Length: 205
Image 1 (spheres, helix red, strand yellow):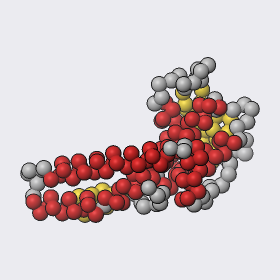
Image 2: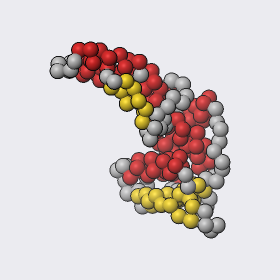
Image 3: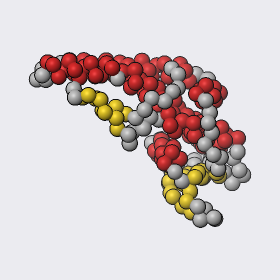
Image 4: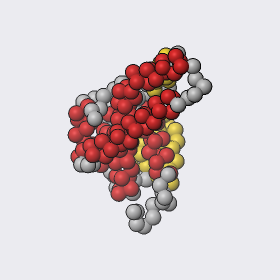
């Protein structure tokens, strides 16, 4: 259940394994997301805005885990169950391949072997994504608790991805909360990312 970088998403076939570089390991976003969670929890201004201006923090894998456990003490139990569910999915995937009646037997054997070779790689990527998504949920919990109305970050792929993930999950909630992610200029004409949040009910479940 350790957090560690593995790499982009593998594309597995009977011809071999390639890697889809546009589908990066969620690990690359985790350090920023965890540091954002720390800063968000501590530094909310009176008008409920948060500006993430710190440089990317080089938190160790152990520090990432320790921080998330501080916010979610039962995190490891949740991850264990999610890993079991994912491993079940991988087993079902192999069973499906084995039952492909019209596939060339040699190609089937090669495909199954390639899936087996990549099993631990895929599990680690899944673990990294699980931790990332739990961190996103903790950020959302702080946003809801504090009725945060705006989050500003530097404009960059990692920051945009994190804010986009937060936006997607908030918009998926069964509540009146709404989000709008925009790229804007600050007072110094630097491009920044802004996540606007509104529509808070009087009581948030």
